Length: 202
Image 1: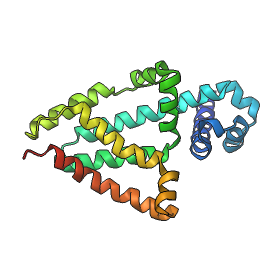
Image 2: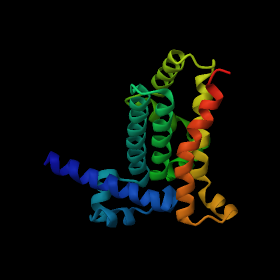
Image 3: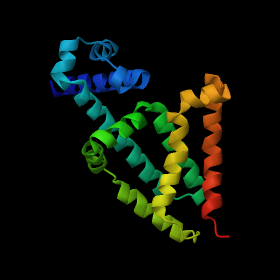
């Protein structure tokens, strides 16, 4: 019975991720999530009761995954430039797969910041652990003295903005979907070079 419950919850969460990615939080409907999961709406409500509860579960699972991956990437025994390439590729890939998350964070940070803070605190690898590991490898590499918080914010902004602003940028630059995907893939290579240029000792 426990396995069946777990499998049903996993099926619902996967369906919810698909629908949230397609419609965003506001556009998603519980009936659509139930249809995607292949269950009836009553069963969906039995497990999660509200769309907000379901989104919280999806949101927390996504952040547990990304912070764990980021820490493992930073902790890997590879040269710094390779480390940055892997880190940025993971980060951009995460927001490509979860494009509904940045907009939700911005809304909640204004309306309900405690919710976002609780997500960060619940992650198995905290942001502070990521920052401390970044400090260590920057010291080991004898790099230009840099505020790790500023470095992390720069990486965050460079990775997130093109994903969040995709409709606007596609319109401005007349990119097709394929051209935009190619543009994002190129940024996975150019952003690490840009960051390295700012932290290498002159």
